[in-house]
Structure formats: structure tokens, C-alpha cells
Amino acid sequence: MDVIDRLVGIAPGSALDAIRARRPEARTHAEASYQALFAPAEAGEVSATERLAAAVFVVGLHGEATTAAFYRDALAATGAAPALLAAVDQAVQAAAGQGPFGRYPAGPLSVEDSPGPAWQPDAALRGALGARLAAAFAHLRLLVLHPRDAAPEHLQALLDAGWSTTGIVTLSQIVSFLAFQVRVVSGFRTLAAAS
Amino acid sequence: MAETVLTPPAHVLPVAFTRDQLDWLPWVAPLAEAELTERHITALVDAARAKSPYFRLLARDPAALEARTRTDKDIFYNPDAGLPRAERELAAAATSRFNGCIYCASVHARFSATYSKRVEDVQRLLDEGIGADLGERWNAIVAASVALSATPIAFGPAHVQRLRDAGLDDLAIADVIQGAAFFNWANRLMLSLGEPAVPGA
Image 1: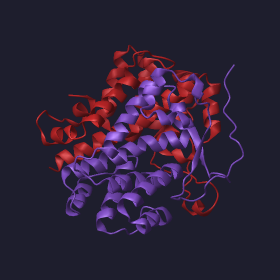
Image 2: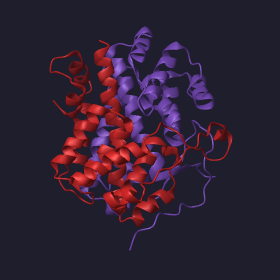
Image 3: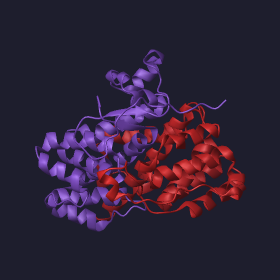
Image 4: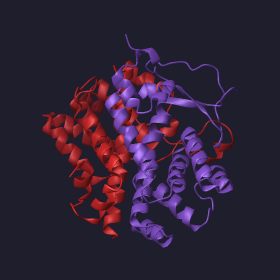
């Protein structure tokens, strides 16, 4: 069983197990994506704690409780300080919202603009997360809830907080992969329950 | 010293959803073609993608890129039954329309129109948005893709039932789920690492 099987509750030999087996490369490489981002051969520019703190925050914003608990347990297992775990939980509470919202480039789509506030961790949260993770969380929340508002200055803010270009690519893959994974988990769980 | 973002060359931003071919300009530096090692080329999966600044940027994390690409290809190209290719592309286009990714929507609206030959319906999705009336089967696929793309996720048993009523079996419904879910991945990368441009404008 891979991570998606575990999170959905797909038993070997079940109908959904058979359906997943019909898309074998997607199954293998969804798992390989999880491994590449959360158990990489080389940590590279993003620490295990940063990767998993990002995951707890991103999945928490999606409100996918089983998946959020999975990543929270993984974060705790890295030996992350209780203060960091508490800070990540607080960040989820503070940053929650509904998406996708955002603006379009000025023009005919402006009638569809649904502007909403950006979010930054407050001073206490910044202190608990540290500058680098605090900047990351602001960016992750943008990508979860209003990705069409993304602009170059958001990447400059990450660079200014000590993220490299390569680190930004990894962080972007983490949030974007999780946006996929939570939807596969949620969708498959709904499909299994409806069978 | 911190790095700085790129300043793209002068260009025209597309301001509407379109089936036209668009360019994409990165906000942070891709690897140069000359810097690509064998590991990077393997991660690109298609060697021709070495010409793409988007894929050369993602190649900075080759393991993540390779797994992303192989996941993508199986969800959309696996010919073994399930949802017809045209409708997998419809799920991708609807998700991109909902999230607001003009670049992604252009690519997958083109594919959906090509494979379905329903050019006017695809264009109506782009022009009118996710509420466009495309006939019940396509409406059900669009509605399911949109509900799955909302945060918090709004996809529920009624969406499954509507897809079944429209004639989809469970493998086809799983293709809708994976196709829409995958574009929540792709849209976020495309929207946040660079911007689209009208070619030659």
C-alpha cells in the first residue's frame, strides 16, 4: 500500500485498488513524487522539518483531516519542537479561507475578479516559525487559496528571506503536489463510499 | 546576497482565455540548456523539453520533475479504457478555467477541442466560464472538476452520482478525479513561477 492507499483506506483487492491498477504509472509516480518531496535522496536546500511543516500547513488549509494528521505525525517524528508544531497549527487557524479567489490581468476578465486579502504571519507567529518559514507560509497560502494573484514580488520576498531559486522550485512543487494529493485522496474516498 | 527575480522581456499579457498558442516567461532563472546533466535530461522525460524554460526551471529539482511528469502522462495518455482523452482534457481545461490559469487552459482547451471536435463547446467554456451549458455529460464533468478544485474541497457523492447518470463508469470517474486533481498541481506551478505572453506581440 502506498501513501494514497493508506490515506483513502484502499484495501488490496478492493474495487478502487483495481481501478488504481489501471493507471499504474500514475500510481507509482504519485508515490515517487511524495518520496521525492518528503523523503528525498538528498535534502538539498529544504530541510525535512521545513518540508513537513509546509505540508501540515498546506493540507490544514485544505481541511483534509486524515491527510493533515498524517503529515503532522511525520513532522512530530522529525523531532520538531512542540513550539513549532503549535505555531503551524496556529498558522492554519489564522490563514484559513475559501478559494480559489483572485484577480485577472486588467481587461475583459476583470468582471470575474474576486479580490481577497493576502495573508502574512503576525509578529508572534513569525517569531515562532522563523523568518524563512514565515515567508514560505505566506507564499504557500497564496498558492493554496489565490494562485492567480501570484506575481514576481512574491518570489522576491522568498529570495529576500533566504530561499534560493532551487529552493523555491522545491517549495512550489511541495504545495502544488499536495494540492493534487489531497484531491485524489478526497475524491477517491468519496468514490469508494459511493460504490 | 539574495538573488533577484528576472525581468521578462517586453511582452503582451493575454487578458482573456484563448485556444491560441501562448508563450510562458519565467520569473526566476531556469537552468541553461548547457547546464543540463544526464540526470536533468532524464527528469525532462521528453528530451525536446530542454527547449522549454518552464521545464528547465522545474529541472532544478529533477526527482520531483520526473515523478510529476510521469504521473501527468499516465493520467492523460493511458489509452486503457476509462474517460476518453477529449474528456480528460476537458477536466484539465475546466480546472484551469476555475483556478484562473490562462496558459494551462489554452493548452488543454486546444487538446479537448482537437480530440472531441466540439470546438464551439470548448470555446464556450473559455468564454462563459464554468457555468457554460455544454450538454449534461460535459456539464457533469466540469461540475465535478470544479467541486474537487474548490478549497475546502466540495466534491461529494452527488457529483459521483451525476457522473454515473451521465454514463461514466468508475474508472472514468477516477480519471475525472485524477485529471482535475493533477491540474491543481500544474496550475499552481504555471501561475506562480512565471507568466503567459502572446507570441510575437
